[in-house]
Structure formats: structure tokens, C-alpha cells
Amino acid sequence: MIENRKPVFHLLNRLIVGLVLAVMFVVFIYPLILTLIVSFKVKTEVWGNFFGLPENLQFHNYSDAWKQGHIGTAFFNSFYITIITMSFQIILSSMISFVIARVRIRYSNVLFLFITAGVMIPIHAILLPVARRAVHLGLSDSHFYLICVYIAGGIPWLVFLMTSYMQSIPGTLEEASIIDGCGLFQMFSRVTLPLSKPILLTSAIIMFIGSYNELLIAIVLLNSQAKKTIPLALSAFVGYHDVNFPLMSAAIIISIIPTLFVYLLFQEKVEQGLTAGAVKG
Amino acid sequence: MRIFKKQYPAIAVFLLPGLVMYGYFFALPVLQTLLDSMFYWKGLSSSVVKEFVGPGNYVHLMTKDPYFWKAFGNTVYLMAVSLVLQVPLGFVLALILNSGIRGKHFFNVAFFMPYVLSATSVALMWRFLYHPEGLINQFLQLIGLSCFTNSWLADPSTNISAVALVAVWQGAGFLMILFLAGLVSIPNEILESCRIEGAGPSQVVFRVVIPMLRPVVITVVTLVMINSVKSFDIIWILTRGGPFHSTEVLTTWMYQLGFNLSQPARGTAVAGFIFMFVLLLNVLIRKVSNKDLVEY
Image 1 (spheres, each protein chain N blue to C red):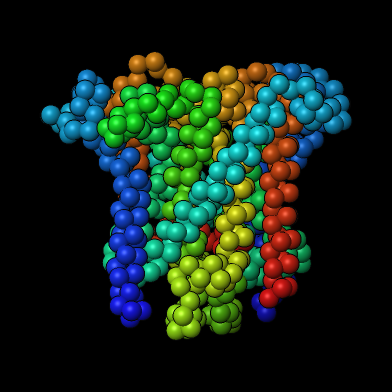
Image 2 (cartoon, helix red, strand yellow):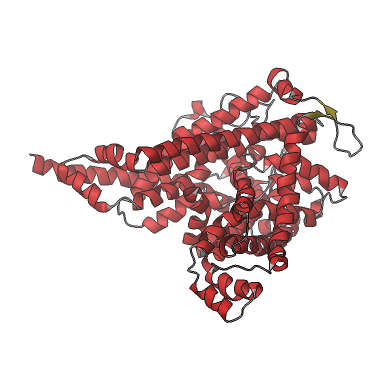
């Protein structure tokens, strides 16, 4: 009897697992697919033919979103803000981490604690003073100021991640470089940085996703149409009484292409990076 | 080890740019927030005179502010929904993906994908799904449950749950990855020997897997709680804290006070409150997890 029942249970289990998996897959992916479908519809088709496919593909939704929805300007803004932010975050953080991890200086653990304490601090705790200071400095609605705040916000995480990585690099190569007469700069740029490539890539990816998606600080610091980043341009679709859903969907699809691209290209790196701090902390 | 005695100028060149950025744009503003929360003033301009009120702003929030406790309650509600739904969901997904199914990679990507999208775009998508004529209601009508259709984001009895579900949807894949990393570290021999001893799947999960994953569970619970306190984007896009403040959370209320209602002092106090709340959660969890380590 028992011998007989076991395979039946097995089959049942597999059936349940398969069913759960299928339902979950639909729940997680269908919203994205629906958005993609709606982005090709005419406005009247959205409610009239809810579950159906569009009769004709309305590619002009995309060009409309790009121009009328101001996604084009925002896309450009977000892109260059993100690239500059990411580059400076990595340069500044790797220099600090290098000193903490590889150069013996006094109080380096105090320095490490001071910087990485920022990991625990929610961004809300800097918002009001940062906004007020922008007004004082005459830098409201300034990309430069926004980038500075973004860079500062990324340093705690990166120093945390990079320091522990650099500490794990064996020191023999660096010692050899010292004997060969390398200075601090050469040792950093020729030995430590090349050896840290994996963590630099991880850092670049998580900081790219983070700044590209950031909304709250951008809301507070930017206000003119020409300066808006992608999340701001998207949030402008809220509030109209008669939302043009195909246009909005096209804007959403355009806006998620860069992050999806990065994710699909570096899938494991992205997952490791985004969960790295969590597992270690 | 490597000692660079006479290289202090060089070391300064390495440290200063980052430290100045971090200090001026992060550390100082944090201190400023904590200090400012002890003063009262109005408006954003520089010429205002700040009046020292000690804990006055905090007292005002807790005794006179009409929406502070509402916001606090909603924040705790978001936290609770995430703990009750998102954590088990992430765990179950991880269990399934770890059970040696075909197409693991494919499902992994599908479940994690929402997490890399911006909360703004996710919330916009869900605005469409929650629309009175949107997917949820269309689906209910399709399966003959049209009596349950609702204006999900407007109805004060459902809107905060609707908001919470979007957060659950977006973050479940993230928790799944955390759980998966833990599951992989459990050696197969242990699970195998349980099976040989005659333990059923549920016994293996509850008696062996979950206890062994304790550190991961603690990490996940901490993260979920802290992220709930910090969440702003989804709520802001879905409801702006409305209608009539029914979905107000701490972060949106801080924003409203600070930037729309010209009460920056009160807003700063909410920020101070969020800061201390998150810090408290961090310390609490660290204590619990340390105790955990001692037990082992």
C-alpha cells in the first residue's frame, strides 16, 4: 500500500508546485505584458477591447510619449545624471576604501564606522536640510547639486562593499609593487583597482539602477520641465483626470528599457549586488 | 604591512574628496535634521528666525497633529502586510526554485524583474490595473464576481491594502533571492538524511530548513520592516497619501508638512522620527541576531 501511494503523492506534489509556479508567473509577468500591449493601442481600444491585442500597432504612442510626455528630455537627463553620479561614486569610494583596506593609517576603523554608519540612515533624514541649502546656495533646480547629493548618498554603501572586497585581496602583489618602487597612486591604479574589477562592476550596476530609479530627492530638488528625470516625467502622468493610458504605457516601457537591459545582461551580478549588503549586514 | 609614513599628503588626496562630499551632502544634513527638529520656524527662506522649542515639535506631532498617528498606523500596516504576505511568498518561491525544477533560471528572472524597475513605473502600471475599469475589476467581472469590483485606490477601506500589495509584488523576488542564497548553503546530505529517516516535506521545511535559515530570516525581516518605513515612491504615485489622508504614511506626511504645508519644523520632526525608528529597528535586530549566534 505504502509503496503504491508514494508515487501518487509525488505526482500530486509536482502538480501543485507546477500550478503555483504558473499562477505566480502570470501574476508577476502579466502586468508588464499588459502594459506593453496597451502601449500599442488606440485610446478607445483600452477599455473597449481590454484583454485583446491592438488592431493596429500604434507606434506613434512612443514618439508622442517621447515628445509630448517629455520622456525624451527626461531620458537624456536621467542618463547623463546617472552616468556622472555612478562614475564619481566609484572613483571617490574606491579611493577611500583603498586607504582603509590597504594602507595602515591611524583611526582607519573610526573612519570606516563614520562612513558606513550612513548605510543605516534613511535618505529622509537629509531631505529638508538639503532642500533648504539648495535655496541658500542658489542651486535650486540644478542638476549639479542633485548629482552631488546622489554621489554622497552612494558613498556609504560602496565603501562598505569595496572595503571588505579589497581586504580580501592577497597583499603579495602590492608588496611587490612597493619593492618595485611604486608610489601610492601607482599601487592604487595599477594593482588594487585592476584586482577589484568584479566589485567595481557590481558597484556600477547597483548605483546605476539606484540613481536611475530615484524619485524622492529629485522631486524635492528639481522643478522645471526641462530638468526632469525619468521618474519625475513619469509621475507627471498622475493627476490628469483623463489619463491617456496608451501614452502612459509607452512612457513606462521606454523608461524601463535601460534597467531591464542592464538586468538581463548582468543578471547574476545585479542579483548579487542588490542583495550583497543585506546578506553581509 | 604596508606603511606609508611620509605619504600623508597623498593619503589626504585619496580621502578628502569623498569625505568632503559625504560630510557636506550627507553627514551634516543628518545632524542638521536632528538639530532642526528642536526648533520651530515657518517657510523655506533663509531669513526666518528659528525659535528653540526642545522636544516641542515631537510633542506636537504626537498630541496635536491630526494625521501623524494615521500615518504611523499605515506605516505599521504596510510593514505587517509585508511580513505576513511578502516574506512567506518569497520563501515559497525560493523553495520551489530550489527543488530542482526545470526552467529555474527563467522563473528566477521573471520573479526578480519587478525589483529592478523603478517604483515609479511599477506604481503607474498598478494605477492602471487598479483603475475602476482596469485589470482587477475586468478580471472579477470575467469570472462572475462583479459584485466585488471596487474603486480600489479611492475606497478608504481598501486603498492602503491595495498600496501594500503593490509593494509585496515588487519586492517578493528580492526576498526570494535572499532565501535562495540561504537554501543553497544547506547541504543536500542533511535533507537527504531527513528523507531517509521518513520526514515528510512539510516536516523537513518547518523542522529543518527554517531553523537552519534563521540568520537569513532575521535579515529578511529586518529589511522588510526598514524598507516599509522608508517606502515613499509607490504610495506617492498611487495615492499621494489620499484621498483625505487615508493612505498617508510617515514619509508622505513628512513631505507634505515640509514642502506643501509650509511646516518645515514639523516635517523635520517627522524625519527625525523616521530616522530614530529605522535606527531602533536596526539595533533591535542586531541584538536579536547576536543572541542567535550565541545560541548556536
